[in-house]
Amino acid sequence: MTNEDTSFAGTRGIMAVLVLYNRPLERATPWPMLLAWLKEDSRPRLKHCLIYDNSPTAMVDPSVLGDNITLVWQRDNGGTANAYHAAAERAVGVECDWLLLLDQDTVLPFDYLQLGQEAIDNRTDVAIVVPRVSHDGQLISPATITPMGSIVPCLDPNQARGMPTAISSGAIIQRAIIHQLVFPSAIWLDYVDHWIFLQLSKRFEKIGVIDARLAHDLSVRTPKTLSDARVASILNAETSFYAAFGGKARAILPFRRLVRAARYAAAGRLSLAALVAGGIFFGMVSPRHD
Image 1 (spheres, rainbow, N blue to C red):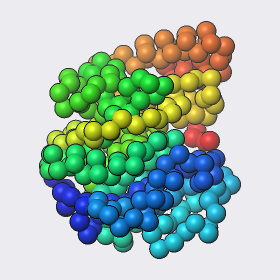
Image 2 (image 1 turned 135 degrees about the vertical axis):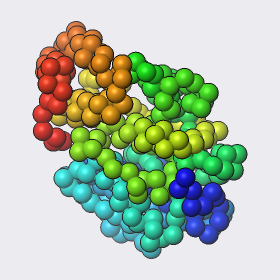
Image 3 (image 1 turned 60 degrees about the horizontal axis):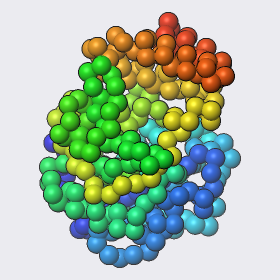
């Protein structure tokens, strides 16, 4: 275990990392709540926030920065993997042992930090605590990945059959865990969350569930909004992930992609269908770009 501190209610505290892409900071859904928490001196306390801007044009006005806000602008798009590593490094300097991972679409309740603390107190051996997350009113996280590779939402991943996983946005994770993770080059944006949980599973780390239900916009659920570059990124990450996951899930991946290609073709997204078909035969389908 890498459990350096089983509480973030004390002096060491928690740091948030907010990942942006082509959206001004003031329009990032979690930002008003983060700003309010940064101004409070209550317990548990948000001590610091790292804003990781992956946009080709800067989306953050430097005037918002202060002693408890750090900005990293990565115009070449470092994805979420690089954002999380940057946060783990910064957390050392601001003496935070826990990271709250957030993207720009996640809605946070005002008492979320308190609920996170309660989840940690309920299971003091946890490496990560995650909320229940919905997309368009349907539960999408936490979930388990079955031996066949299906991702099945569940209320408690500790009680379901399969490898526990969850959407990373809204998760509160030990900083040391992120610091030690190595992400494959193909897993820089998509499948970052599943990769984290695969590594946690291999290390027999414990997962807690936060008594909160967050709303989240999951872009992969709406194929009409996906670009060719994004689908290529998804396919490459998927190939890399299931190569590590192994077993039956890896063997039947080509058949899953065949169904997906047919679905894209039926929706008139022929270029996406062609990319997925290429992934059936070649695995990696194109260089990363966005």
